[in-house]
Image 1 (tube, rainbow, N blue to C red):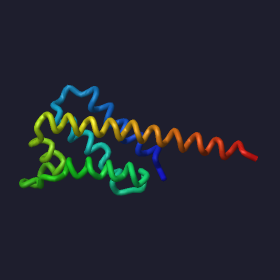
Image 2: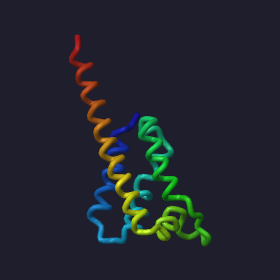
Image 3: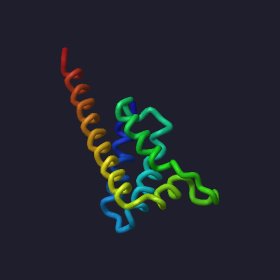
Length: 116
């Protein structure tokens, strides 16, 4: 499982959201565009993948009527600020939990490697 890649992609998205001066909606779109590729691979354990999938579902529920922006940008553009803020909180929480899981996996590997 490539949880390290998930840490990298989610970390980049969270960093963008924290540093950006864009609207909350634009930050959501940027995050989801940045880490959307995680949905096509086995980078997250099943419990974290469920949370990731829920975030992606929330970011892709509106079709793009023009076909020029995509569902992520279209969905984010019509979100209320409160919804966008809550979604950013879920992204940050997922990122923190993915980091914790990666750390536990690294420690477990180190313990296993040391045992005779």
